[in-house]
Structures are given as C-alpha cells and as structure tokens.
Image (spheres, rainbow, N blue to C red):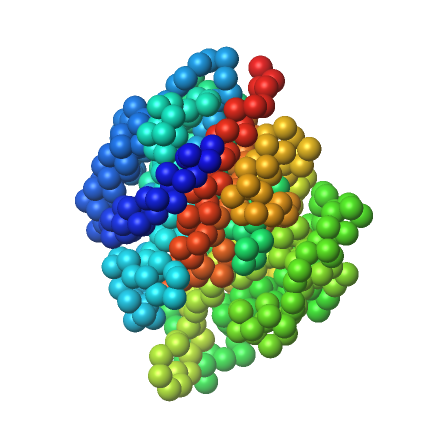
Length: 458
C-alpha cells in the first residue's frame, strides 16, 4: 500500500495536469448547444478509463452517452461499482467568475473551474487510484466496475433505463459515489444519509390578458396576489410546513443521532458569514445542522408574474408561476408529499383563477447502516488518507442514483466526498482544494484494499 501511495505522491503534478484537461471540456448537459462537447467529454473519459487499465465502452442513450469500464479479477472477490458524472452545471452568470469557467486556474491552493468538485475532480480520484494500483501492483485486489454518466445535472432521465437493461453487466456488491463533501476543512466525512426530493410547478391564470389596475382593480382576483398568498401560507412563523399530514411519516432523529450532531464543530456565526445572511431561520426545536440535513423542508425556488421592468406599470397580471421543491427525510414518500402540496395550494386558490399543477422529478430519502462492514472498511481507508477518522453525517441534498442502485441493482452505496460544501458548487468560481484532490486520490487507493477484506453477502 505504501508503494502505491508513494506512486501517487510522485505523480501529483501529472494527475493535476490531466484533471485540467478534463475540466477544459465544457460538458454542459442541460444546453443542447453543447452536444458536441458532451460527446467529446465522453470520449475523454473513455480514454482515461483505458489509461487506468480498464476495459471501457461508450453506450449511447437517447440523451448523452454513458461510459462504462471494468477490471474483473476473481468472481469470489468483492465487486465495487463506482459511479460519477462527467456533465456539469451551466457556467452562468459568466461575469461573476474571476477567471473563465472552462479555463482551469490555480489560485491560493485551489483549482478553479466548472466541475472542479461537482463532479469531475472527485470522480477522477478513483480513476487515478485504479491506475496507481495497476502500475505498481499489476492488478487490483477486487473487481471494479465504473459507470460515468452525462445527465446527472439535467435529471439523469436515461440512467434508470440503462440500469434496468444492464443489470447483469452492473452486478456488484456495493457502490461507491464521490459526489458529496467533507464535513469541514480537514474533517473527513462519510455521508450516511441523504434527503429525498420532490419538485413541482404551479401556474395560475386569471383574466385573458393584463388589465388596467385602475379600471379593473378590485373586481377580479389578481393571479400574482393569489400566488404570493398561497406560497406564503406554506410555512408558518415557527418554520414548520403547514401542509396537512406533512410530518405524519417523518422518521425523527434518535437521541444518539442528536447527540452526534451536537458534538460536531459548528459555528453559527461562521455559517452566517459563509452564506452572507444576518440570521438563521427554520423549524423550531431543531439545530441549524439538523434542519439543514435531517428535517423536511418546503421552499419556493422561483416566482414569476406581472411587470418587473424599470419603473411602474399599473396592471392586473393575467398569469403567475412558482417553482417549488420539498426535501424529504426517511419514511416520507414523494407521491404523498406531492398530493398534499397540490391539495393545499388548490384549497388556497381563490375563485376566478385557473389552477395548474405540474409534477417533476422526485426520490425518497436514504439512510445507510452505520455498522455495515462496507462502511467500517471505508472508515479505515479515509482515516489512513486524512490522518483522522471520518465523522458520519447526513447531507441535506439528494442523489437519486443512490435510490436507483438500491431499487434496481439491490446494492447499497458508500458516499465518500473529498470536496467541501464551500467549494461553490453550481456557483461562479467553483473550485477544489488541491490538498483535497490529492487526499481523495489516496483515500480511494486505500479503499480498494480495505473493501477487498469484506466478505460479500451473496
């Protein structure tokens, strides 16, 4: 193992140079203008897998390609399925980047580029660690399969179909995903739970066209007035969601879990400074960390209606629209939450307003067994690389592929994040700390040795 770690240390500059090549490809999946770049990025990943010693193939989909590679050693040994995504968020707004989003730049020990942490930098650590094992030892201590898709940032609409039609190809004992984060600077973490999500859009239509507010004001329901009242009614002054039955199925944190949260280093003042806010707000009776990661939420993500240009325009708008998401915790089901949300909004919609409710993606929450042999082995690997044991922590975000792996392939997932929540994911000046990239590569290399000791339950 030490020879492999020494090999990685000696070739850090090479790995960083290759990562910069990866980051220069503007693989924006949500925008059809980038389709050629998406294909170019899939080709780059294919070559990177091949260079690492994997047998690799590109699988076309109805959307962007999936790249798959494998190194099978012995069917008696554990098989690990590594997942990542090569697509990235759009770089907008461009004017808020210090340096261009697709021109990787190193400043103050950080590598700045779109995708540096989410997810190119993190998934690349696994390819480099596999390559190190192959070049130093001539092989791997277990079977490895690598699945890298190109649609995670735009809904991953074709991934489940691929999983269902390639169950045998993807058969594994456990999955590894590095698309989460450390707990803090130098404090490694293993994510043992994720919140689920539902997304919806509500559209209101009133008069057939915008009307003069002086001539018609007071005689018709205003769609913007109605929508703001409806949305405002979703959250009470105590921070609790007001949808009837919303909390009925919620699995609360145990006393032990709450004690674990309380023991984590956390400064509310530093948190407020980081996000640029003057005060915290949320469901009473729970700490900020608990509310962020382990309690359900309902948020208005965007609202649109009427005139928003310079100066006044005295109208009754003809329509209004809002986008809404709810974050779910274990035992909550997306269908029931969406049904409750729609019923609540309909009940608060005034007469004379046409109501439309659109449902989008959703997934359930996920909690991993903290006593699992896989997780215990992963803890040893992370501790070796970072020099201290990882904390077990729930993330507030959602990674739908984790539920897909469980439901379609029947396997659990190890969520091992090397980046940080403060790395400006989805924002201008996204970056990864060079130290985190290198430590993540070392942790990945240690992981294969540790997971090889686990006896799969087949």
